[in-house]
Length: 425
Ligand code: CUA
Image 1 (spheres, protein in one colour):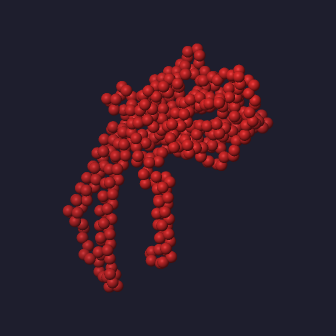
Image 2 (cartoon, helix red, strand yellow):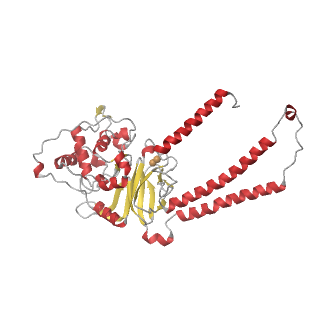
Image 3 (spheres, rainbow, N blue to C red):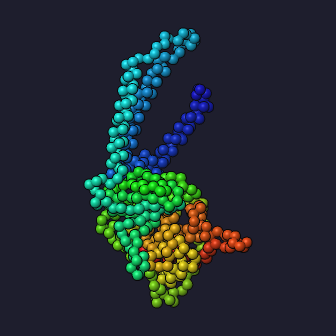
């Protein structure tokens, strides 16, 4: 029983703390507006809106049932409670076997509640399952493929050169999906290893990527924007940091992006006037705490603008450093897993890096793509995304009874590799 004063005081304090917390978070995190990066309440596309509608219908029906049941319960509790010592020991009232009118009424009400929920639910299942028949022709098709722990996006309709002899393959990007605004997009969902789940709350719901099963999802973005998504099915060590981004662009900008992505990797030739540039001294990379966020405030204010800024080559590129980085990319085993179309790498087990410099994030959408974070990643990938395959190449291993060192990079090598990767626009 909640009657003792200390107990009441404790509850009072807990309530006050809760009220304080909501006030504070209301100011800082827009708690009440519920419009966070992965909000399912503030949506920006017809598919997500239809799903939200079903959620609201279910909520309202449940609320009505809750109010009725709670009121009847409260009424019965107060009306029939024992009011004196003699009430406590009184004979129970005559027992009956229910009231046919009430029982039929309750069955009828339950059926009605289910029908009210079922009609919009079935309608939504039908209409959000795939691109509507009338819009199939203009649908944009993409393949989304889950890997432990990143997303590959493939554009089967966009054949791009993979070398300078004219061989072609579908355009591939990693962790950032760029789509056209206003057009239905059909994403074929696949996985190369375990079950993942593709979840993009502001534009569409969630569909699993299941081995040996051809799943798909359909969505449409209503306006240009930058959207957050993530894997929503436990898939191993770094499941919680397996994220992705979606950038929706107007037709013209989208066409420009496609054209830019279709080219082979950008080559920065060592410039003659830089031959005598003094060798720069590089500051050591600062220490990062475990799980430290890697996104700057500036980036988060307007991520779409931040993404656009990444499409252009950086000012003050150091051409010698970039050439040195390209050489390291070859000799430090990066080429075994990564592809850079037109340059050396042809690996297929890790993200395609042909236009890495034009992405806004790296490490499965986890950290911002800037020199500091790229250095942080290539210095110790296992500290950013535990258990990932790249980290294995850094580990000291036993081979023929001898301990062999994994990849080791000096500060200068780190900077050179980062400069090369950032130059890949
Ligand atoms: Cu992939 Cu969780």
